[in-house]
Length: 327
Image (tube, rainbow, N blue to C red):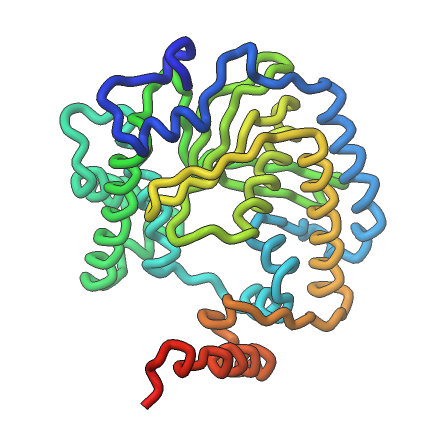
């Protein structure tokens, strides 16, 4: 995103310029990849997962997303419990979709970019749909709608303040869906990238995949983006140049270069995750408990002795005497 690439814009904030400096690259700086890489990755995935296909129910493919991989590589007990429960929309689940729709509208918006106007229009567009989110938006309470609007507005405002204005020549795409079928479509890898910029040119990498995050860094964020890079490579053949998490609350971008080793590591993690998913869902395996900070907001906490014990130990470790606050 340098001046020669047409990405530099005048009167940028420090945060906006930092994004350009970290994500930008001239064409001669962009890596090239062997065109055989895509086939190699497909062969690795298909060969490694072929042995578990017979364990899957007939006419019911196994859908694998970044969330299911994060779940099975994290606390398996939490993943199994959440997988068994029916999905229901809520403000925390809907706010990202609304914000991303508002950001999409901002790309071709005429006049001043007001976050509230963009969010209102995004809500109106999404409510006109026929999917489950549209139904939820039509039926949610006024309190839920107000909360949703407030939280989406916060995300959009922070994005517009800290991210460089999206230009059509950057080829920006929001919530781009990817579907990769393996083992005769018995296993489907799926993903939805928050934002992508650029495109590949032959074997020259040019695309940047970006996940928009609130809060702070977590190791799983890197794994999510590497999974997206794998899907993009399987879809197009040329990997993305970079993947990046953009932390809206901090106005900071954390990029990572994509390499052949990164893609193979992502493929191996996917293989291990899919095998374990099949064991848990169809093979009768008992889920492993892996307590950690996420126990604080886990829906299974009231029924999970392991998680409660871990949280109690954490609370005991926080000694007020260390801070001179004892009475």
